[in-house]
Image (cartoon, rainbow, N blue to C red):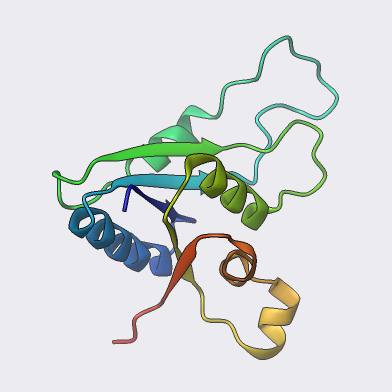
Amino acid sequence: MKKVLYATDYSEPSQYALHVAESLARDGDARLLIVHVSETEASPVGELFDEDPEPSPTEVARLNAVVPRDAGVSCEHRLICPAPASENVHIADEIIQLAEQEGADVIVIGTHGRTGLSRLLAGGVAESVMRRATCAVITVGKRHA
């Protein structure tokens, strides 16, 4: 295994997924790619820029704070910001596209464990990634005490 892509939304299930991703990376001697897809545009709609705007320093700091407990696990962080003027951010598409670009062997993602009507109404990033990714996907649900 060469690369484990771990997608976080900073939720509790996401924290559990980090432990799984870290274990896979450590045991497989793989690099851990820690990813967050921002739902906030990097620049206001309608403004023109000669270069890509910088992401929010607050968002960058929040993502960089997500680290494996084992300092021996090699990792890097990637904050994905939507393109200016994009109407909808399709988080699953962004995760899948990055996994393909990076040649990820596996995607690890937390799931909120929604079922029934709430799942149909809210969609489900983890479910969409699981159905459409070309590499293996491991979903990690919320632990029950």
